Image: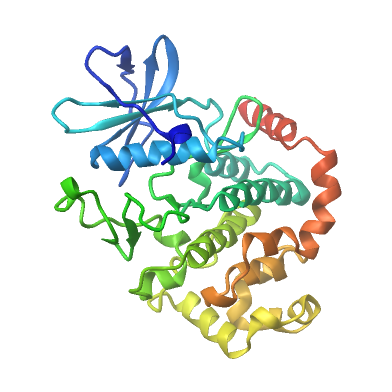
Length: 344
């Protein structure tokens, strides 16, 4: 990390951190997230047991990603226990929750949301990831739970626990792949943290389950593209096309074989919508709106090498058609209107 993104940690003891007695916001592989007060301000405290150098790396990546991207969460502070038992990342509290909760509430209350707004929400997330990839940062855990909604209705990307700076050839942070860390570690951490599960299984690209080689930077960026494809299903339909991109999932396996046999990455949009979409293997895609199908299909290409990049998504016909709506609409204000309706 350079000096602009370096993080100076402070001891928890003597700090003004006060964890509130509420139930934890969430519990996961990366730690436990609590609501707390810090210097009298309501915040989120992410308590992690992984080594301090990994926590500093995560905080540094968030800081780097947010330098030119207002839609990335900010780091307030990094606190550590003197005995090394845990490290706590202090982050802003976003009162409107996350994108998944927002979408689930819409479905439960049977609220009608224009398809174009759903598409614009996806477009906003893609633009956030596009800025990350321009900085050679790969998020590695894109899912609606990791997209928060701030007080202005703006989308905020959070949880960089699995994120990587792929521009670092000799990174001091190991590359996590297939549940095993490979690559370089600090000398004082050779025996620490040898195994770890990456991301969320239902959002993970198929090659993560099968390849045993250290991925290239470009290949890792396409992990995010796959996750974006799954994310669109959730935004548009509040469901996923399959449970996991593995041979053990029959829906995915049929799709993967059909995709490969028919070289779907090279077909025209008109052929997809007029011919191929009727095939049983593409049944999940029939539920999608007409315009996004081609783009999402190419995001969910089982072959990493020919899968879309984020730039390809941004240059798609679908996004070109959405561009005017994106520029002329206030996504944040529309999201706030929906939240107000949901809360009434």
